[in-house]
Length: 275
Image 1 (spheres, helix red, strand yellow):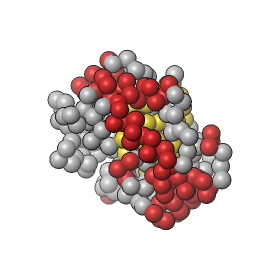
Image 2 (cartoon, one colour):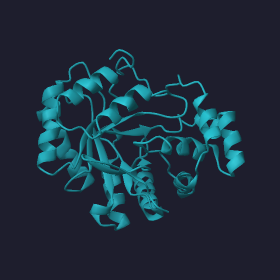
Image 3 (cartoon, helix red, strand yellow):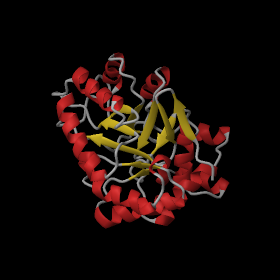
Image 4 (cartoon, helix red, strand yellow):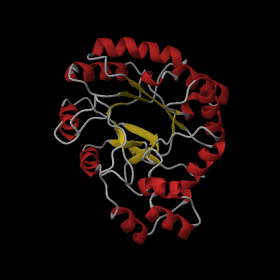
């Protein structure tokens, strides 16, 4: 298996990773160890998940050199400025038991967010070498552009993205600014594989509908994904999507699906259209 990567001046990131929400404790540690043994090299966690310590144990248990693993964590939205982000990040590194992360993100925007100061705080952490790259998560188009305009060299946007949700506007902004887009919930909270169109494509290729959903994202330049998978069998299934190549008719059929199904939309979410 040859793991494809996204490369830009600000980041080098494996395109398929392991999402760890909402796993905790021993289950999370075992999942991280299993994924790394299968060939994953990209692990995604967050302060809010309450599993950074478990992820850190999984990283240690896998026995791989730290430099071979791409690790993302995210700072929760109650940290509105650089000082608060720094304090939270210090705690995250301790829980993860690692001297650095490969990508540090602001998890969600909030009305209290002091965007210039927060991004300056991320940039200072990067300058210290404790985060190799920085970015944001769950930012709508206008706010993402404002963040980019701060000029701190954002490397990545993480956002819900799958075959049932159009994120072309955000992807266009990311590509125009040399940023990667990481898709969370890349299977649409398990709904995408239920689509008859994906099931038909899967049957044609001798694959699963979940693999088709991931292969569709892999066909989008500049997009990485972090599907959550606890069992080794599901992790291996997702990994096998790397070998599935969709043809033009497959891509057209998926493009024709309605793209208005958002599954992660908590009360604190920004205005996705005008924000």
